[in-house]
Length: 413
Image (cartoon, rainbow, N blue to C red; front, side, top):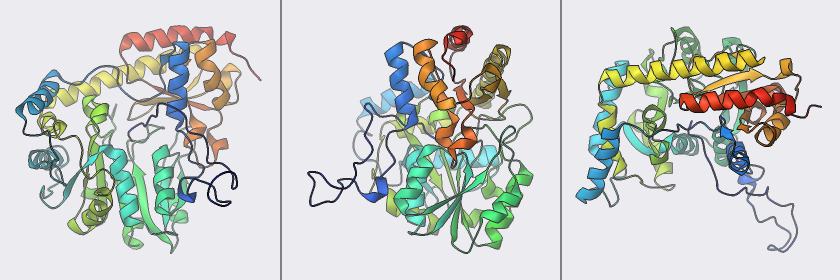
């Protein structure tokens, strides 16, 4: 999922009372307790202390020059500076359909089954708002990206976790079956998974599909890391499994694949009845966005195979560089099969609270990371885990690892 930031922390909504109308709190219940994302807080600390930011999952280099130039051409042409069509510009929707066929063997109708969104975050939010009624249960892989928690809450849904337990974060279909009840409406998947790097296998997805079909559930799947799978892992879209195309909303984006996270170009793919529900919510969020960027991303999706192969091999090498360095420092390292992130257990180094560790790290060591407990339904499950991003230049990874040699300066206790 897209990592979100804000410039200034927002305080938690105040308790009832005060100077607002009557005794009512100014914040609506649907946003109460959401506060500020952990990514914003840690990024502010990183800037304040001049720290190497291995926390937030954004690349530190620009995307392909030819894609950037395509956006410049679109800006200068004057043809894409007004509102684009509500569903997205036709050339991008056609490119998304070609991408699904080229990489996954899936045929989709660009006119009725593709919706361009403001990043994957909006796609997930619109899917939840459009498909979940108050009181419906949403089963999601735990730990989960923080916008899932917010989206389910905003929709009035009830979050039900299926835990990917450490140290290997493996998917257990028995836990999924136990989580589903007559009140379950939707399964929310993320593979490759943030923050654990787990990639659901074809067998895992077949088990998910069996549960979805048996219980007549909609599946919303966040696949933004679809081109970032390593070793012998394979990304398999669940929409391609028997009986799943008609009940799946597939969400992805250009940000992670093309290192253009600030452009916020994502998409949702679904059969027309499901996509209509997503579109009904999306049109009252942003309506449209990114007009000049949309034809540029259409160009990006048609880049030759060499681009995607190089992306995968480059990121795999950076994963190994960071994981090996963290292991040499004494962390217990979980090697991810996909995504941008390495997870570590901090206990071998004498720490036992990941949140405090990450709060102290920028000041005392000059590095920023993200505490795992921010992602878990039960924060205690992630208390001793920390997430590190390898979506950085090798020189940045090396600088972070060098600074981490000063961990002895960190307070413990």
